[in-house]
Length: 310
Image (cartoon, rainbow, N blue to C red):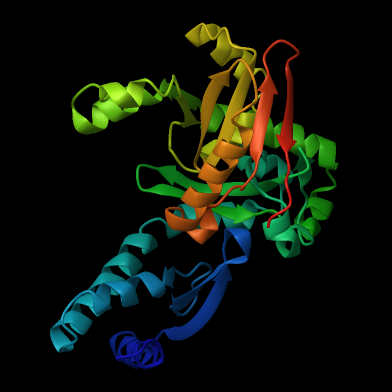
């Protein structure tokens, strides 16, 4: 069953299961100008309706035997997601109803770091701040935050204008909230590997040198911690780093890797490594950059070494 037939059959079956509801297809933009297909089940009188991603269900369907039983499991999964999401709509309705009132919503405003060039069309519609030329800081209102993830609503230019808040004040407020709601987490990479494999790093891996993982407690959009005030100086003191520079490798939007070094002779090697990993291991919507960031520990300065893509 190809994807078009799958979607058509799915919509038909959902209309049978929810005869009083409006069933509609849609497309939602993701980070880095990527998109995913959705189906919305809107019951009469609902302010907020669950928006369910179809692509993941189709991949799951293809991984099983292509028969009615596997399609039934897809329908079951979508219904379970629908009812589970509805449990939280009361709080979501409250947030959406209050979103135009700045004083009611201001403690929920946060920011995150994205690639500027990969999101230019999106940036044209929303307030943002440039960061190191390569990146942009955008803003969202957090609707839900918990063990299952984070749900948010992007802040558009029209919403910011309605609030009558300046770009500078929005940035300061969002940054302060983000630091509180998403505290930074850092650890030596060897500690992370040890926790994953239950043993010390192999000897030859340890010879590569010390590296550090930097993210937030949720592990979602953790690369944003880079803009937290004074964070890199704090980490240098915390880990007793003596080297002159830090290579900052943007492994994804969720984390970065710090590599202390006395000189910058490995810049091209690390840049190629980041590119290779982005191409082969990182989902398109989770790429942060193919470039390398350098932090000068002595001068407390940071820059992105931008090189044109070949």
